[in-house]
Length: 335
Image (tube, rainbow, N blue to C red; front, side):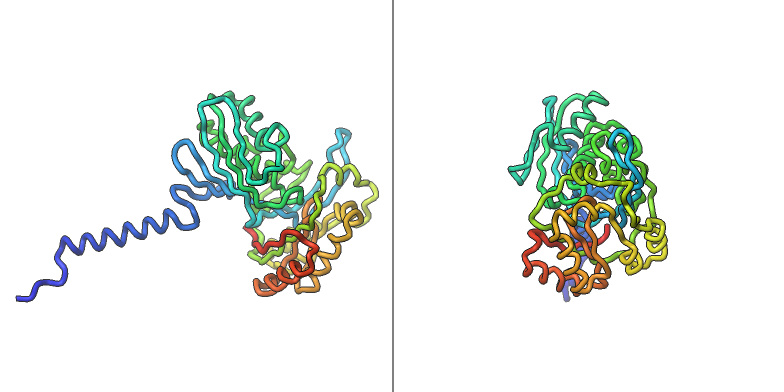
């Protein structure tokens, strides 16, 4: 008599192994382990255990940046369309019993004291909410430094987010954003993320329809620019050409990437580009290589271009690397 190929117990084992393998795939795919995206902030969250969190702190670009005037306190009233992109810093933040913060960074020239926005975020949260214990921060930095992409602000935002989770403070994102502006004008946006209209000094945020998916080349020349210096050098009253922020929002609502690109504008280019002509050269190179348009992000010096497809973006990336005007060149996408 022929033995049956499978018996009931064997079948159950096979089914269990398949289910187990699928669960492992889901848990470990894209480094998500026990974590997930926080749906309100788009901060990539990965919970290692009850006392440690991994985060992806994502960069931003400005699809439009207008300055309306200068306040008596030195801050400027702005109107900007902000967009999160796929370039990110990676942080591992661990709860420790000592009342202190320890910061380790892969780039050893960066400060790990009160001059670091991560430190400022910890100090603010500690003073405001008085939780017991501290944090150890392991930061792997990939967002270009002093580049107009909110690299420091997004690290601070992620630190605040992690402290809220680790110490079970129970704060809403709105409460975190209200605290975040005390660190920097971009921090509230870096908590919100996505596509947003920023007004006031950048802290008044309105969620917009998502920017249509597109391919973006980001290039940073080997120079660093101080945001403070750029704004101090800007004569808001002398601006003659303002970007049409409402037209950019309209194009986003229409889902028309080309229109968004054609309507982009940044008044801070009037300050930064004359100081560093390489920015204009990179912009022109991107357009010559097929970008719908190219623009400086924030106060610069980073330039980004929006492309019709990935192949054209890849071709531009290789061209820019060969030109050697940019030290860092990335292909990314909206997030």
